[in-house]
Length: 179
Image 1: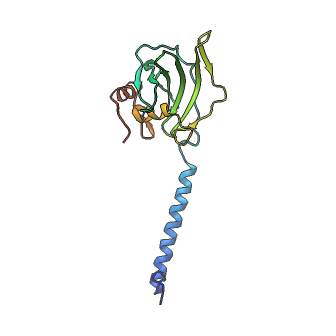
Image 2 (image 1 turned 60 degrees about the vertical axis):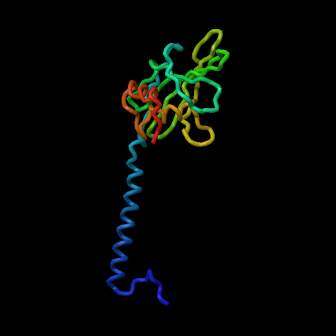
Image 3 (image 1 turned 90 degrees about the vertical axis):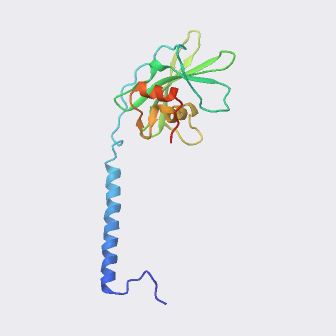
């Protein structure tokens, strides 16, 4: 019994060769697209120092329904750099008033986060730089739940920042969730 995929005529063989050539050309195009990836030459801009820590007007958000901490982002800390990185300060507090804060950057284009500094309550109370910080994926077992919540809650619109910082904060306040 002949194989149903085998060309039975020279004309069918010719069509098969044309199809194979088209598939090979499109695979080459995909490789070329990888070589022209717009993120390939991306460089992070100079990172401004963290802003002064304040608890006034924190915009609340929920990274996990199981967390016993209250989370908020300092609205005046949210910036969008020329490199496409959204920088912000997150504050986490427990019921007794103890707090933790960190200064991060979020790249929507690559779904990554970087922690630039942690708040040290002191004395003296001050930001402690996270020297040698690397970009980490928002996925996987070491994902930052607060960063994921901010990305999905309004900071990112897919792989791009969700407009200006005011737009991001408005979406976060309205409780937008990623589609």
